[in-house]
Amino acid sequence: MKRILLIVLSILLMCPGMAGAEMPLVYPAETVISVVPLTRVQSALVSWLYGPVLEGQARIELPEGTRYDDVAPAMKVLMLDYPELFHLDRSYTVSYYQDEPETAIAVTPEYRMDAAHAEKVRAQMYASALEMIWQDRTALGLHDALVARVHYGGETEMRHTAAAALLTGEATCEGYAQALSLVYRMAGIPCGMISGTAVNAEGRTENHAWNIAWLGGCTLIDATWNDQERSGYNTHWYFGLSGEQMAADHAVDSDLLVPLCGDQAGWHRQNGAVALTSGQVMQAVQRLAVEGTAVNLRIPDAALYQWITSDIGVLLDEYNTICPEGCGFYGSYVYLTCDTQQCLIIDRAETAQ
Image (cartoon, rainbow, N blue to C red):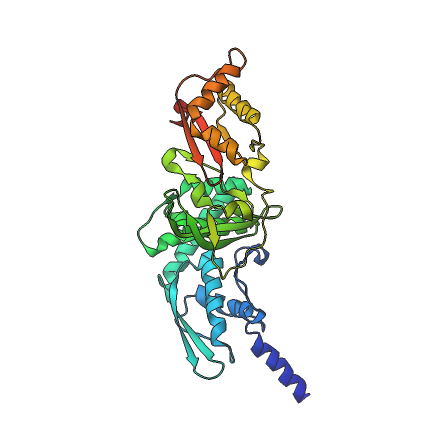
């Protein structure tokens, strides 16, 4: 009997948190998609730490026998995967014994605000997310609502959080991604955040964050780069992309593990807006000329895309030479392109205004 008890105790020490630590999530646990590879012990440690961090505890005692090397992955998951922990700063201290292996005994996180303040902000953030969900709980509708209400900016560390995106309307890419994760999960849509780098329109590589979601399959979304508010458009160039498509200008951090994703939920694919031939492009221009529907296409063929975007005026002139009588396009136009994704928008100038 004594031997059995010792074995059980050993299992619990190897798997901290497995002895009943629960995470008081406001969304189903199965909606959390994490791309941080963890061992079973590290996953259990996340569960152990979540509640005390949510409460803003100054010093969190760790289960006996916790390895020092297991703390950093667990803390990274708390920062990356749980938008409601917006008050958790990126710095923390680990108290440990310098033995072999090094044993951690406590974590002292740094917080952006005290627990009482964080609780009030959290309640407001949840209410804002629920308001969005009540209006439209579809993945596309929630994405569009978020992009419409947030613009890139902010001056404090809070700009990196879901709270800033949902409550102030100003956030960085991380704020967009954290907010989309939260809103999607509260609507029952599995989602998570990916960190890495991206090549911006000026050709510079910068730190960046975007989302992975389950929309009938694994797919990728970058709400920040869909927000083209300075042009007057919120695009869907980065909605429902495959891993290959996103890799054209995004690179995942090397310590993350992202599954292979398809483009089955891609906006252009879902809306029949993938043009494979010049004829399909001309059909889209005709809809613009006759119905006023903006040309909004993804053009996978690089040569075709280059020909079309090299001079939009030439494209429209050629359309006018072949279009049916009375269907010509005349007047001013505006256009927007995304070379890395080979996407194009053409619209009447008066409509864009």
